[in-house]
Length: 88
Image (cartoon, one colour):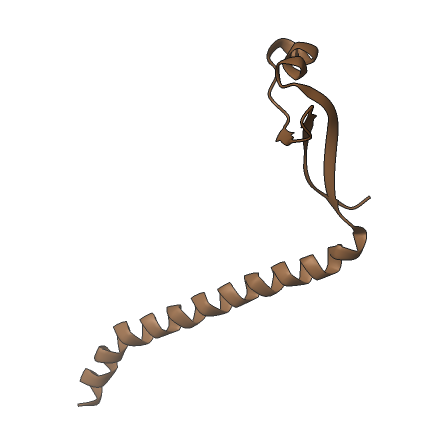
């Protein structure tokens, strides 16, 4: 098994639709109304775990780095005038 991406129903035309919310647990009527003939589940294979994990971590680090850079630039802009006034 791997990381589950999505799941749902397969209709008689072969279309994939997400599983409907069935009120009162009446799944049979719900699935008949959706013209469902089967189920499907899509997975990322286990071999994709580390590349996906490293890509997400890299994106988070890049965004954190940009936000830190912006925070320091904003801080320098707001406190730079006070520093210049004291030096004169």
